[in-house]
Length: 244
Image (cartoon, rainbow, N blue to C red; front, side, top):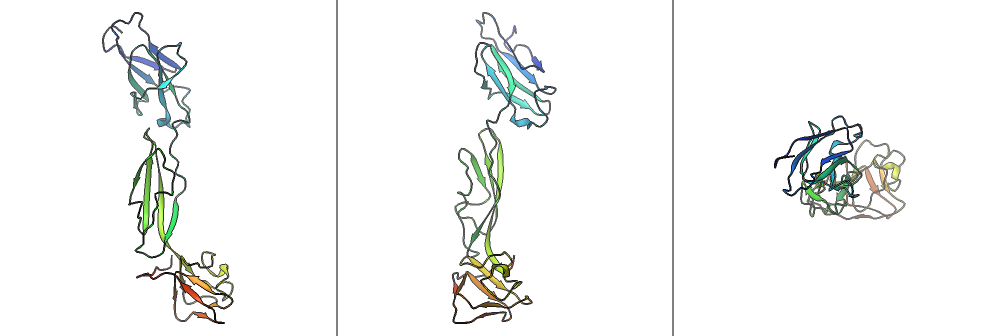
């Protein structure tokens, strides 16, 4: 280049390109544009924003570094930057990786007016997080986490804060302690709200061992405790949940 702005350099289907000025006493710069629209090394399966423009000072330099000043045009499929005695190469790797928060999560609270800390459910080390609620005291409901890396890659996860409800079906017998008699296949614990509706195959009985639950809603006398057994109720909620 013979001016401060230099000339537009187009590099198509090449591994690397650049301009080296012999005797660069004026430290001239040039505009560099790398087009990867027809680059055979850009695989169709490659996520476009995983592409990176690397640079080095000259071909004797074995180390390529990311050019963080390069501007990408995802429509024209080009990278544009300003160089001075610099070579450029398009590349990609597994680094920087995209955040991967994993699966959505369900957690439980006892009463509808309780809250739950949810900020520790995901590993967000080195990421910028944005919660749709206060993660230190998340209320009943559905909450979203967006985690973004320093390269602008992001991932989202959803946290469902619920009350755990066990609904009696009585499919097998009248035994409270048979997990197959409950809709979720689990015998109620101190954190589960129990609902015993009408019209089940068998009545619900606590007869062969003591039982526990967060609360019990037994409709129309469809429930009994016999043989001097006990039922421990753990919660004192102002309102009770409905069947889910």
